[in-house]
Length: 246
Image (cartoon, rainbow, N blue to C red; front, side, top):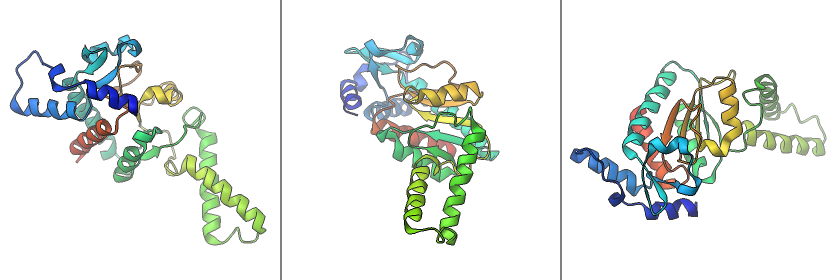
C-alpha cells in the first residue's frame, strides 16, 4: 500500500499531455483518473515489456499508465460482463489483497456474483469436481447445524464441527452457488493470483483483469491497465464499472 501511494504521489496531470486535442469532458475525466492514482504504475525496473503498449510515459522512473486506454478498456470489460449478467451466466470475482477485498465483496454482492477474497484453493477450476464436493459438504454441515442435526454429538464434537465450518466458510462462503465453471474470472492484480490465472487459462475461462504494468497480459481477454494496489484507484475503477453496468 505504501509503495502504491508513493508512486501515486509522483504522478500528476502534468505528466500526461495527450497528443490529440481533448474535449473539456475528456480532460476532466483524465484529471480525475490521475487524481485517483489510476495512472500510477510500477517502476521501470519492475515493468513487463509486454505491457508497454499501455504505458504513456515514465515520470521519475515510475510508469504513467495511458488513462485514455484505461477508460476505454474499462467500458469494454463492463460490456462483456454485462452481457454475461444479462444471460445469468456466473462470474467469479477474485481479490485477496487487503486493498481489494472490500471492493470485490461489495461488487459481487451487489450483482449476485461469485467471489473469493481469501486464499485461492488450487484446483478450484482444474479439479472442479472435488471442489464442488467440498462445497456441498460445507453447505450440508451448515444446514445440519441450523436444523439441530448436530445436537446429537458431544460438546467437543460440536466444537470441532463449528471450527470446521468456520474454516470452510473462509474458503467457500463466496462460491456456495458455484455449480459449474464460471463464464469469466474477474481478478484484481493477476500477478498476485497467478495460480488462479493459470487455471483459468487452462480451462479456457475468459479473464478480466485490473493490472499494472508489471503484469503478464498474455491470456488476459479484457485487460484494465491501472494502478491495482491503491484503494483510491480501485474505488474509481469499480465506480466506473458500476456506472457502465447500470
